[in-house]
Length: 86
Image (cartoon, rainbow, N blue to C red; front, side, top):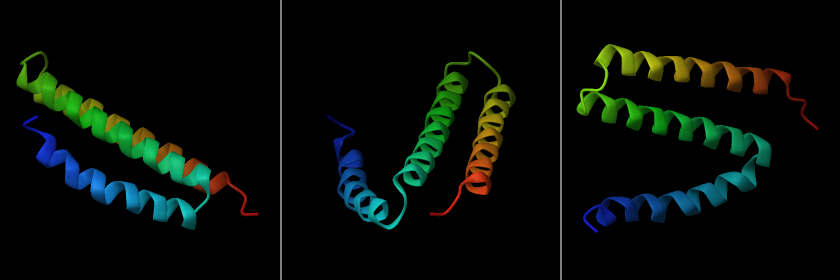
C-alpha cells in the first residue's frame, strides 16, 4: 500500500502515452522498444537487489547491466536496420 502513490502517476501517464504512441508506429516496433525497456528496468532492479543483499560486488552486477544494455542496443539496431518499410 505504501508504494501505490508512486505507481499511480506512472499508470495515469503511461497508459494514455502508450495508446497514443502505438497509433503512430508499427505494432512490432512498439513491442520491441517496450520489451527492450522492460529488460533494462528488470536488470537494473536485479543489480540493485543483488548489491543491497551483498550477494555480489557492485562491479559484477553493473557489468551484467552493461552487457544487457549492449545486447539490447545490438538487437534494436539489427531490427531497425533489417526491417522493410511497407
